[in-house]
Length: 303
Ligand SMILES: Cc1cc2nc3c(=O)[nH]c(=O)nc-3n(C[C@H](O)[C@H](O)[C@H](O)COP(=O)(O)O)c2cc1C
Image (cartoon, rainbow, N blue to C red):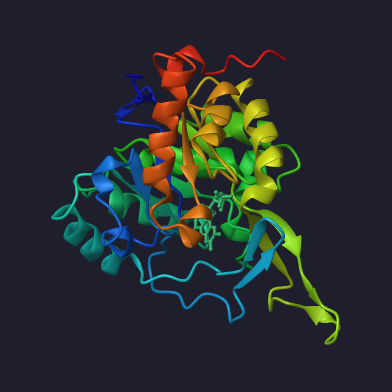
């Protein structure tokens, strides 16, 4: 049987499948569907220090093979999330990754510090790339210099591995990835959602109060795969790939272009136990192709 373990350098996951932030609640919501211990890891929905209501409805809009969202990082705040994580730990040993948000660099560092101090948290993912928040401070991933400054500041405050989540909406995502690496990021994850627009022709206005929204799901897979491939060739730290994954073959595609692990997002909404199926498919596919372990194909794309 193929070995599915995924080596991130600073840790090894039992398999490469991580559930993506914002698409898996705080883990608890999925306990009725399957045993979370089968996953490589889970990422919590993005969290700020204080509770946030998020954007006014509508927040979701389906497109052909995709989903536009404008949630606006609604959440219960860091105190409540600490309680949720402690409760979750009593029910599963799956590694928990906290998706850290901030209105400004100071808040990013503070929230990262809070969760770095929790034994129940395995690592942090810095969400510098949310497209659905209006204040400019929430999206440093547009700018390499800002990313460098912020990552360095956060690294000084924490003792856990730091994944920096990148935006496909940056003019030069490779430069931002390199800035994160130089500032001490332990890994980068990409991509967050692509900015998109849906309009209501009758009302002559956007479907969303914020005008633009973030596109995810199978529609973005070729675009995301290309960006992951580009970043993998230009950084030495591990890359966690995501965007439109719905099958075991999709996961192996990301590993082939160089990803060390992947995250699965939108598929969790319409198939809550998708991860179980996908992990089974990776195993079956690797056995069929006689691939012994992921390192055998990681980054082996002939291009
Ligand atoms: C409804 C929704 C909410 C999301 N919330 C977050 C979030 O809080 N933090 C974050 O870093 N990414 C968030 N994302 C982005 C996903 O984690 C992921 O990067 C993106 O959806 C691409 O993967 P997919 O095509 O498999 O869904 C959200 C995505 C969706 C659809």
